[in-house]
Length: 254
Image (cartoon, rainbow, N blue to C red; front, side, top):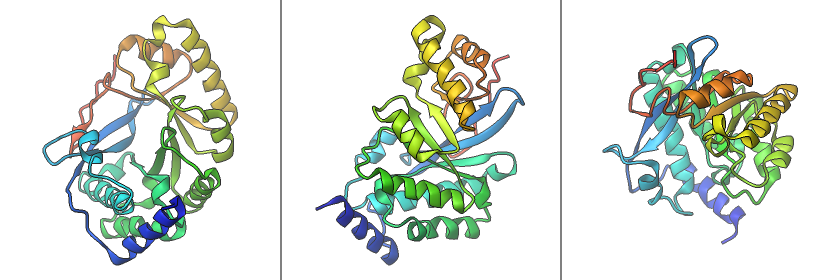
């Protein structure tokens, strides 16, 4: 079955409200602003009901239920975030699967309905996609990003630097936020080549008027080198691990 056929199948499934045959929940990991000492956003991360990692959950996801899963992730993230009142002081960042979106104007309805039902402001929602996902139709992804932005959502590119199409894809998509992959962050305090690459990326993002997040930060040394480069949005175990159905206590690195 072609990718477009799968999308049509997903659109039909969303309209009929078919349920998944497995359950999952969410953990939340903060994205912090080191300059203001505030939480910029909480990223919703898929977890099993007993705290199992995302890999455990994704083993149940296939081409026939990918669309229902994507919609369920959005609803669960918004519901939990509303209960935790995340909207009061930060954004909610939701990962979405571009290949699970047939028509953005139709597939967004579930999100809008959930935001209304749980009284979560839609302008406090970020949609992020990973550069690792195989995208065969880049124009389709660009249409999704443009539509989400037109509806008042922020958009983010996750895992930038992990794939092979980073720069060309970034030029086409122009998301509001770019998250530098941990592969470029790891041991950056000891790696001059990584320092040069990230330093120039930060300058480029600044000129493109994009916010930048350094993700996967695990040590004080990594954090300080990145902050000296002008990065102020961070995510990683150094600040807080994902917290199961709750928000974590932040280690501010002082």
